[in-house]
Amino acid sequence: MKHLKYSVLSLLAAAAMMFSFASCGESSSSSSQAAQPTSSVTESAPAQSSTETPESKAGFQVNGTKLLDANGNEFVFRGINHAHTWFKDMDDIALEAIAATGANSVRLVLANGGQWEKDSLENIQKLIEKCKELKMVAILEVHDATGMDDLDSFNAIVDYWLEMKDALIGNEDCVILNIANEWIGSWKSGTWAKGYTAAIPKLREAGIKNLIMVDSAGWGQYPKCIKDKGMEVFNSDPLKNTMFSVHMYGSAGGSAKQIEQNLTYATSQNLCVCVGEFGYNHSDGDVDEAFIMKYCTENNIGYLGWSWKGNSGGVEYLDIAKEWDGSVLSSDWGENLINGENGIKATSKICSIFE
Figure 1 (cartoon, rainbow, N blue to C red):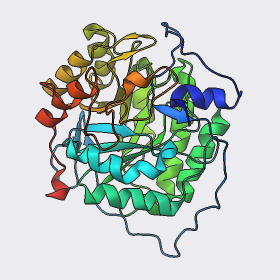
Figure 2 (cartoon, rainbow, N blue to C red; figure 1 turned 45 degrees about the vertical axis):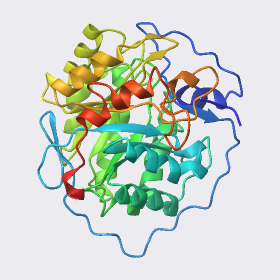
Figure 3 (spheres, rainbow, N blue to C red; figure 1 turned 60 degrees about the vertical axis):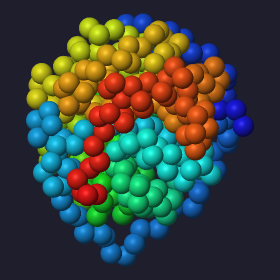
C-alpha cells in the first residue's frame, strides 16, 4: 500500500483528501515525516492494565542542557525514526538493522486509534523488550494528532498514555515518552503551552516518571515556542524532567544560522533539547544536514534521522535505507547520516545501562 508522509497525512486523512506538500513559510509549516498508509482506523480492544502497577525505578533525568541516564552518565541521542504503526510486520528486521548502524536510540511511531489502528499495551511492551535486547533506548510517540491544533485530539493521546502507563512504569531507564508527534500545526506558542502544561501534571499524577519529550509547535518546526513558553512547560512538570525536540526540515534546518538559533532557543534558557527529526531535503527547502550533525556533535545535542524506510507520496527521498535489512542505504541521505564524519557510526555511544 502506498504511504504518505505522516505529519501531512494525519491532518488530511480526516479530510479524506490527497495532500501535496507545500513549502513552509515563516508563519506556517508542513513537517517532513515518513510515509503513512492510508488504511482505515481499526479500533482495537482497550489494553487491560495489570492488577499491580510496575514499580518505578531511576531513569533518565535532565540536568540543565544535559541528559543523564540512570547511572548518572551523559547520554546523547544518535538514532533513527521507525514508522512502526504502518509497518508492523517489519519491526524486527527494521529494529535489528537500525541497531546494526550503531544507533543508540530509536523513535517509534505509535497510534492511539484516532486515525490508525490502536497499538495495544502488549504491542508496546513487545517493542520495548526488542529495543532492550538490541541495546537501544526507545522513544515513544503517538502520531494521530500530528499538525492538529485542537485540544481534544491531544487530550485523547494523553488519555491513551494513561491507559498504557504499565508499559512506561518500570522502564524509566530505557523508555522516553514523546507524548504526541508534532501536535499543533500552527505557530502558536500559547496554544502549545496550554496543552502541555495541563497534560504533563496529569501524566505525573498517574505515576508516570519517565523523561518527557515535547515536540515544538508548527509541525515541530517552530522552536520559538520554546523561547516563548518553554520554561513554563518545563516548570509545569512536578519532577522537572522534561526536554524539548525540534524537527528540522527546510523551515527550521535550512541554514547554519537557523539551526544554531533554533537550538539555542532552548539551551540559552538551560533547557535540554534534541533534533527529534531531520532529513537532507524536503518540499519546504533544502536542509543543511551536515551542519545539523556537526553542531549537534560539537554541542552534545542528540539527533534522530527521519526515517528508516517507508516514505512515499513524493518524499521517498527521506528513506535512510533502500532495503528494510539495511543492506543498501540511500546514497544522498542514509550514507551521510550513518557513515558521515559526524554520523551515527562515528559519534554514537550506547547507553551505559546496557553495558
